[in-house]
Image (cartoon, rainbow, N blue to C red; front, side, top):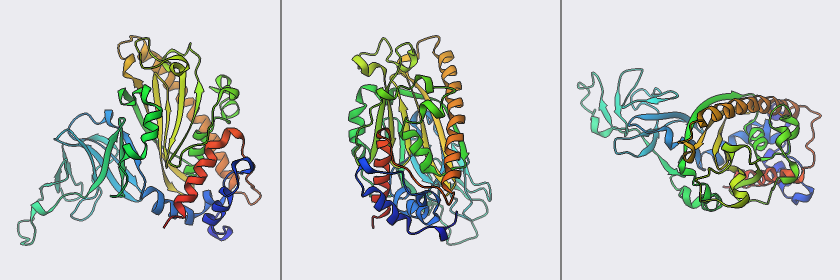
Length: 378
């Protein structure tokens, strides 16, 4: 659908969230189909907020890196010689080629176009055939640095140099999940894929478990008890809900050696949506996450990762149990892909009308309120 069918999606969304939750409807379809709204998200959301580039446990050695794009900016996070992870531009300072691709290790970063070579900290090490240029000074070159912080094991970056420290911004998240000791989890897998849907549809799909019994009838739907789901009103910068796991699902529950947790918390799963686009399923035994970034109105890039709590590292059968879990997560992703891509196709219809929200979709309403606030900001 092109913008000629859309009447000011920012104003439409503002009117949508002006209603109390008890009367709320799903977001207007224009916020998913309008290029103007995506442009506003890039400028006022992804260019200003904290974005997750991955887990620090995947960047262990000097030169370990993850290359990615944030709001149109090619970036990399990389482990430096000083033992710290930092973020910098992924664009050569000569003829402006991009440098690194995907994930890997580059103790020296060499431009694939003319061979200019940078240290892991972004300083220029060598530039072939430049001595005849009298204005060239190698010491004047360093890849531009970007705000980067490691928080609870997550590598968080922001293009906004004035962004509130992430530990302050998400302090209430940290307080809520403190007994999980999230920094004590190690990433075991990391994948990337692109789905044919709007990024917010996938984000909302994660935020509500109302769809589990139907969309996931072939996998986890039968284990999803709607009457046990808690979906409270959320703070301005994240939302959450919880599900209780069956104690027989051992790797989803606290390890016997875990003395940090008591009672039902030992089998509680938190589903956390840290705005704009870090989505975390956290159990006492394992975690998995999605970090979303729009590629176009109807395309979303997904970084998908997960792993185990280190409490389980000494258990001989945990690799086998986790492999079974990963197989289940892959099947769940296939189901989610089908559901979210059908939603996008449906809301592009001229006859599509957003319906009223279930009480189990309270996180979606809070997410819509956040997006409205951000896109209307100066």
